[in-house]
Image (tube, rainbow, N blue to C red; front, side, top):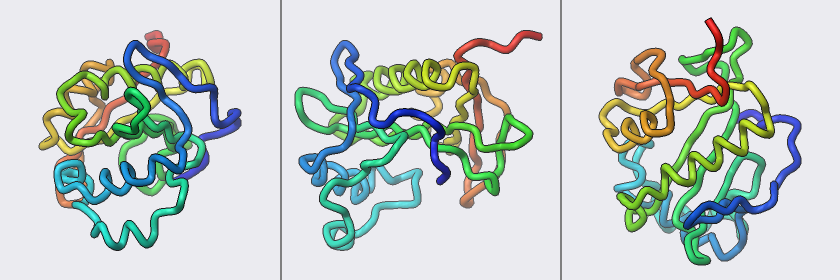
Length: 182
């Protein structure tokens, strides 16, 4: 993971109709462990990690870094949205120098199917478009992850290519805050 870039972090909390995107706090630790230990959440992300290992390794305030938003619903963490620079070594790039911002997200299973991911990701993309005008954002997900494919379409990502990575077919798309001309 490469630093997001020259941006003040954390930004002021971002409020949507139902959610708050904010910096991680100590009270989020149990939810972070729940995300990484969940077989459902980690189905397309390399599988769950052992809860006891997470309990030992997870810092008191997990996820406190530029580009990571905790998604808060009524005072409780329900997931995360991240904007990180895509590793140059990985396949899938839209800029000749690579290093595009990549959108990632994980939500606890009890938050699935309520539109929270679309609401939170749209807010994070709006923030990014203001902080980094004109920069594209990429998204990569397994083609087998139907909900993530639907979310990418709903957010306005355009498919660029598909490739094999991590033993599975990957969908790779791009989002522009301002559509390129031509």
